[in-house]
Length: 237
Image (cartoon, rainbow, N blue to C red; front, side, top):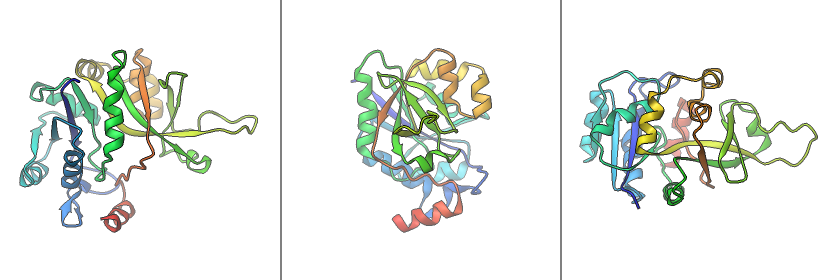
């Protein structure tokens, strides 16, 4: 198997919960817990945090972690981790979200295993959700073809259930895995039309002819975007 590296983009500024990644979560910061839980899965040859800020840099060094200090402004986490490719020596790059402090070993193992199929260039995760949750525009939905490649991602419920049939809805879990050169090429592409409409960067890949292999997971990721999310996460700790 190729050498694998998990890269965790960690931007200091945040909108809904200010400087959320350095917030306390049971004695460690959110970004420290994300880094340590990713390392503890044992799935990766290397784990790096890619950040734009000295405080995050110092926090990761405090727990003995590897840090790449980004020097450029970036529109997305994928753009941020691509800047680190000159330093990180790995063939398979997994973009782990910095605000998800409870990483799941099985999900990440399955994601890496998808690349045993040499045709797979990009992979990501999906999990089944209820019809009610599918109505939430903050839950990104995905539909796939017969080979589990993504056909489309949307903030709307897809597929549209016109005849009130039995429908399974799938939520996209935003952990991406890329072959190294695909990540580099992806971040050099201009922002696409559908990406701009839905505000979903993965649509740039689909619009440019890349396939995204979707891997099923039962793990319900805990993402910390708001103060309420942080309170719930503290209870979990």
